[in-house]
Amino acid sequence: MPLALLALAVAAFGIGTTEFVIMGLLPDVARDLSVSIPDAGLLITGYALGVVFGAPILAVGTANMPRKATLLGMTLMFILGNMLCALAPNYATLMAARVITALCHGAFFGIGSVVAAGLVAPNKRAQAIAMMFTGLTLANVLGVPLGTALGQYAGWRSTFWAVSVIGVLAAIAQWVWLPKNIAMDKANLASEFMVLGKANVLLALGMSVLASTSLFSVFTYIAPILQDITGVSPHGVTIMLLLFGVGLTAGSMLGGRLADSRLLPSLVGMALAVLLVLAAFTQ
Image (tube, rainbow, N blue to C red; front, side):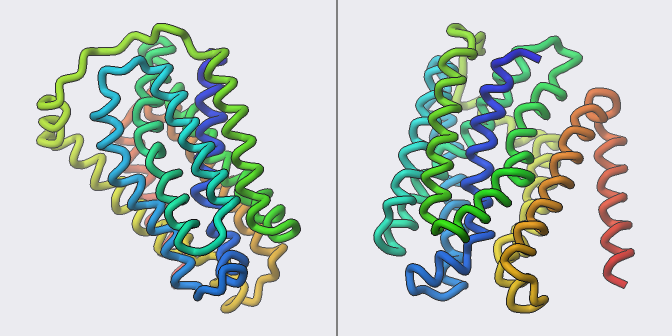
């Protein structure tokens, strides 16, 4: 795999860490800023809204811009947002900083996926995209548990400073390893929106919406649930986040290989497997 994919994966690692790590630090943030757990949870909602509105706006606004410059610009926005999170003196400022950080999230992964697929042979495209998204899932294996542990030890702000450093490393890697001239199709805004009329696109979007809703309904409050309801220690929360991330990473790597061979049967099979596991553990 080209080193350019590694550069994209490093950026994905940083973005994934800053998105998920606050879930492990929710009680610490709420206590430090003197807000309730539900109010602190809105920081995650604010980030999600930033992703929802930022992705289409930035995707349309940068449709005809050079891909390398666009990805670097979004990474710089990510660095700025995390630095503002680390410096936020109050809840309102932290909320604004989270939204700023989130603006580049969806667009980066959308553009990054296209770039990743264009860096390899056609029969390796799914694996290339999975490679980039491995950075996102590795964020749950390493970034979130380590970031949570760092935040519990040195204060939650230290975690955002550490993520800012990851962003700087990602920007350097993209500057060095991404090709200067990345091939791109001329964008047509009308055709960009017309794609939403295709059944297979709506199916993919629907699956993503349902999967994300089910995940974040629980994952948002995983730290207070584990500590206050099940009696898990802060150290135990870190271990649980690690186990969660291992599952995500293994699934991402396996999914990329299966998609390159048989896409639809793989999707159906994995969905059925998830339903069987949930049924077995909820009896």
